[in-house]
Length: 388
Image (cartoon, rainbow, N blue to C red; front, side, top):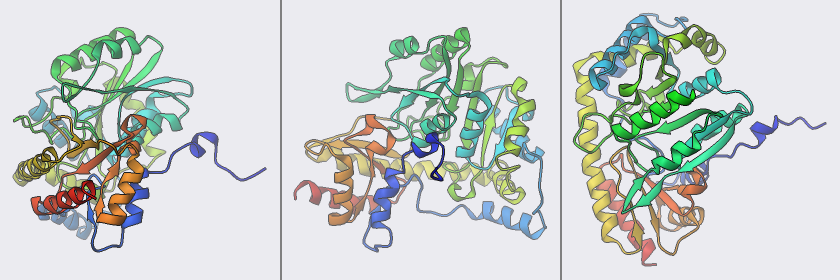
């Protein structure tokens, strides 16, 4: 017998974003917008907090659920930002947001379970439950009147009593789609009636462009023991992508089992990394960092959207969150071929939409977490491609 992985692993797709990025990495002339991160380093006060912890010898194991002071800070942050009634006892610190997603799935999902996912979506979100043997039902967003929209009635009809979990990512990667509070409330009430778990990925909650300080959390409508798990991360709001630090907010009844699952994944997040996260939440410069990030993103977003809407053949639905423009080009149905040609012939690195599932075929994702000057270079190169 051949030495191969189990079928669920072999069936996993490689990252199409990586396929495009690998073709352009190492070239000095590439204007790269393919990954979901900015081009500025983590703020100095966060790095200095981690450096101090290292200098003080904080290199040992800590509690599976995280440092008590960080759990307290996370609960306080959630309560102040979202107006909810969280507590440190409901918080679990994880070694990244993607680890939080996997741990949440491991807590809830069994082989054969029906898991509904609103798509298009970052592929890790669909592949985590699939890796555990779940049956994934993809529920696509629509483009209606120039905006990304959710057919709520059809979604509720899909969320039948045999559904184990629904996964919602809003603000959404890649589309930027956001959920209003009435829709959140309706989804949660429906899931409560049918005993369906809700996994709400809210890592982009601070990257919102409707004038609010944060997108509303699903937890605003939750009762203490509702079957809802919130995923969040330090990566986006505080420029900490490489730190791999996230958290979960869970029902109290689930908490006795959470440390066991974390133990068998990473044991714990590193203490000195957690000290960086603590600084992000408790130092006044943390909120200044978020405000400055959002201000910069707003300027870059405006520059990108203005440039794209001026071009012929571009369709770009409106969206109010995250850090991406998700658009398509009339006459260019093969997004992989388009993305490859943009890299090879024009030095422009964008993510192919099919990386986010079949619903994204023919689309392209542009991360605008970059300075407007770099955005301008990218727009000029896209215009050259369109006029080739």
